[in-house]
Image 1: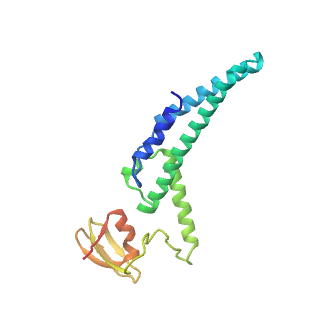
Image 2: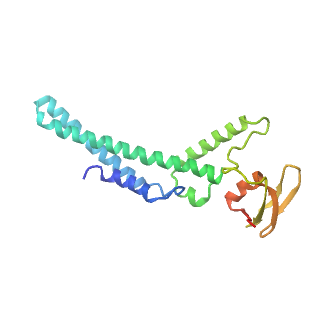
Length: 196
């Protein structure tokens, strides 16, 4: 049937929850593009036949195929756009370094887009707030306190805070740190917020 592969791409997106990214369905995209190419070629031959021989009975078929082409085009564009929105959200959630399990599901073009987005966001953040810039990815939720107690989940090494104090982050050690300095490490899974 017409447009089934395009609709399958959209259904695949609906099965995923927010913040999840499935493997890029290159095979599905290729099948939709092949179907579009076949529909276009059929339309071209029918249009030429309708013009040269005056067969007006081919016009409804031509319009139907054209509508299928447009629908497939919308399905592919929606699939790709939704994946880009998910990848953009992952940058805000995980920071500039994505886990390997997520990068594995991205195609080369998506990785390139992610790197360009990451660079653009970094350049924008450097332009804000004076010499050091302003990290707008911090404090995704308004903080209740400026300092929080955290537990280190894995060995991370030395960590310097603003006053020059260097803290050694070893597995299972607990520290009382400024929220904004450790929020990125919490998102990366190095630290966990200890709630008393």
